[in-house]
Length: 135
Length: 364
Image (cartoon, rainbow over all chains, first blue to last red; front, side):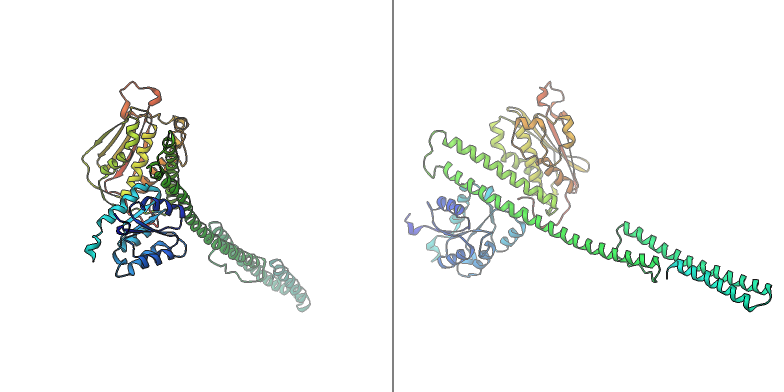
């Protein structure tokens, strides 16, 4: 597969080493973009319209749930882009809020192996319609 | 006016009256008669003075009784300038003081509780971040993505990974216990098949079970679905089965029985571990307690598992107890006294758990 044919994954995570580990794992198959705070994440998301967004919750400048809401406000791309929430604490209030916006993948980082996270990303991306069909 | 002054004034005025009557009347009988009348009037007045004081004293007494039982809301209504009225005024001031202190300490307590909740969730977030970083990097290296591993490197990394997993488990348990202690966790019952939860957890421990050559014998009766919180039941089975697997020696048996009784479902998990020493049995459900014999076998362990199980089951209207040595599995067998085993019994009422609101879930 040519690099330009690859799907793009955006990782929004304030912990540099966390984002780095994920990025190392995913960049073999996808173009990976990394943002280290919520605001930067939202800007990149709206500019580059990635095929999948991975969002941490507790982040400086803008928290992950706000980024998620703002992405969903984008009617062309953001309204149905797959989003995976990555977090360190499974707070039912956060989970309920995310599911209201059609986000059901709520992964507590300590519970998931890196391989399993990569597998979920792959499942989500494989479900996406082909780029040709979209056009 | 002071009570003693009132009485002195009355006696003094009767004396003055006596002198006046001596000079005023010539007749001794008249002098005596008028003085007698005045004497009685004064006696009557003294009686009224004392009765009034008596009433005030009674009010004071009742108020002090109220104070000792913690009622500080009503002001004392005693007017006047005498000692008792002044005492009442002092008591009123004392009550205002106590009341303001009580209100400020109640709001302080609330602040402390809120700080505790914040601390728990912040601390667990902060503790989990480095743990997940370690987990993911070891994952990355072990999977060979960072290059081929030589010699014992893989083995050492797997050991590191295991230690990190134990740390994650400990942080999770501490978070669960804090939520139990703070009462912030919610119970969300729904119709659940608890045997499939038991199976799911057995599957989760399959690696450990297989590596120790442990046989898990399952004995499930015909069970209705129960209205329980599945995430809480998962926690219960996780702690039960993890304990059994940890302490059962290689090539031994763990028996799990789940059966319907008249009003309850009875879960029994029996292992052939080292059992619980008799003298330490009363402490077994206390937080952070680990029996001496298990500390020798397995140095790691949180001492939180049974505490968590008990808290969940009792808050859900059920009951939990144990038997060690376990009669369940080994009654008729001639077994090594070191492996006398333990059976943990859990009763869950057929009507299930009651819904409870809360800000946090126990499934960390």
